[in-house]
Structure formats: structure tokens, C-alpha cells
Length: 469
Image (tube, rainbow, N blue to C red):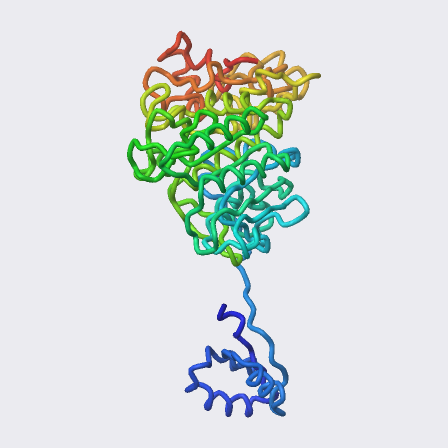
């Protein structure tokens, strides 16, 4: 790395700096000068040269010109698309995601690096913490890049507490591996207590040994996730196309099938896979595309949701992810999108309905609500005196009265409400779903019309006072 040879040479006086500057500016090793600081930046590749500059009487010191990084953090579009931030990762420590790939940059400042990260390499002479191609580190960032550190990107699970196990089966040159290596890697994942295995990889040949191995691993309680393939046609890739494995296709930011994403009757679900920004070795970040990038979104969401319902089985988590997916393309399952776009929020809500919390539900006022007389008359105003009793059923706004929107008025708007049926949209199409009805006064204007599946928005959507509680 050329950065290892960048040095800053500080001269003691301005005159000595100017003299050296005139001489060194013609030297190919000189990178730049900082006149105000009396510093010359140059490449020094030998210990002899370094000692020469350190020993000069007119030089105050010589130090390395080290890297600095922008202290900014962004949430990649894919993390927002799967609504990962809507689900708490406070209990993610009960999950272990195994990543079978090209390795892991354990020194990346935006990735977990503590005792919760372990690994093994199946490549002779190469450690699992080396990642020559960067593929595995990119995948890991989507699953687990640390949030809240004002740096880089955010992963699906962002508090740094997720357990990761890395199995390196691709060499630093990024070459192919073998079916037997993949089987061995998956068995290693199982042996360390993994709950989810991500495989952003695949081959075109069905294998009896591989199929049987993945059947056995799935039956042991582990959720298996793999990339569907990047040929952009109906061909099948393995292990994704085994029935024991969730096959993940890719969409772009417009929720269209990515042109490279395979589509077939084995496809189970889709996730963001075009122009995905994530971690890269050396502390960097890169934007890549492929079903390899889509698969870790699903693996990450599976772990995130499962961490909140740890008593569920792998098969139950799989069924919930698919049944709660956001339907794309033609209505229902199709070969282009499978069950649809994986959604952490919808999977969590569905499990919450199936497993209602014990004790009193937590009530939350509808964010930003106020009645039709203006912003003064919000939920806080309704807490005063007998305002709820007198006016709670009047002056609807945003499709709800105070009795529906405000906890003070005995609202049922709490964490136990789920749109019913989940994924409902009105008769004008999928754009007009419960999320659309939650905006402005759409409930009040249209909530009683455009029924489908025997329900209008006023009956199906929590935002309109309906839903299942």
C-alpha cells in the first residue's frame, strides 16, 4: 500500500523549508508542500532515506501522513426499503449469522470486531480476516454495519452486538470454490450455533450431497439464505434453488426487478440488490450490484425479526418473511419477484399479532395529529380537562378523530394494531395501500370507498381507525 510510504517532513525554519521546497518540487517523490506549516509531503520507501531526513539538522521531525475519514454516516437505500430501522435490534445478541464468503475485514472501523465475531478459513495460508476481493466484507456490512458512529453506512442490524461467524471459502484472488467446501462451511456454521446462514454465491449444478446437507441443516433449526443468480434469465442457481433454502432475487430502487436478477419458480423473495453501498476492505466503502447484495438484506432482516421472537422456529420465520412481503408485480406470488420485497416492519407486525404482548399494550399517539380546527388542538390539548369527552368524536383530521388518534381519549391506536389484511391496497392498485392512506387526509376523503377483499381503508388500515387490534 503506497500509503505506508507517505511522510510529512517538518523543517525548523521558513528559510530551510523554502530552500528544501525549491529543490524537492522537481523530485518525483514529492507529493505536496504546506508552506504555512513548513512541511513537505513526500514518498519515502527505504529506511535509509527515512533516517537521512530524520537526522538532518534543519528537520524538526518526520511523521507518517496517515489516513483520515469523513465523519458522516448514511443509510443505504436498501436498508430503508426493507424498513430495518422500524424494528429494534436491542436483542440481536441472541442471533448468530454465519457468512460463507471471501473473508472479513475485522479492522474495518464500521464493522463489529469484538468477541462476538469469529471465523475460520478453508483456504490454505489465508486467514478468515483477510478479504482480497472485498465481496464478503461488502455482504457483512449490509447485515451488520455499525450505526450511530457518524461513519460510513448502516446495516440491517446496527448496534454492533450481532454475533457473526465468517467461513472463508474463496481465496484472496476471488477464484471459485467447490461444492464440498460449501457443504463443509455450512456444517461449520451449524457447529458454532448459527441461527442464519448467508450464501451470496452459487453454482449451476444440482448436487445430491449438497441438497441432502442443506435439508439436514435446515431441519436442525437454521435458516438458510442464498443469492438467486445474476444471469438475468430463468436459470436456477444452487444452493438457492433447493427447497430448504430461501432464494433471493434483486430489485432496484424503483422496486423493479434488477435486469441481472434470475427469475424462476424457485425464487422465494426479493431484496435491494442494485447499487448497494456497503463496507469494503481497508476502511473503504463501495457500491456493488448483484443478488449477492440482495441476499444479506434478507439474512439480516431474518435475524433482526427473529431476535424479537426468539422462540419461533426457522420455518416460522421463513413463512412470516414470505407472507408479510410487499407484493410486487402481478398480484400474488410470481416468478419475477417471488412473494415480494422482504419487509422487517411487516414481518414484525405479523408476528406481534400472532403473539400479542402480555400485560397492558403500550399506547402511542398518532404522530403529528391535530384536529381540523388547527395545530393548537393536538393530542396534548385533548389531555386537558374534559376535552376528550366534549370534542373527542368531533373535528376529524388526517382521517381520525381525537378518540381514534390520542391515547388521552382512550384511543386504541397502540402497538397491537396491525393492518388487516396485511398488505391490503384498495381497488385502484398497490400504490393505494395503508401507507398511502396514512398521508394527509386520504382516510377522510377516500377511506369509505374503493373497497377490495370486502374491506375499505376505514376497515383495513390502522391509520384510518380500522385494522386488527
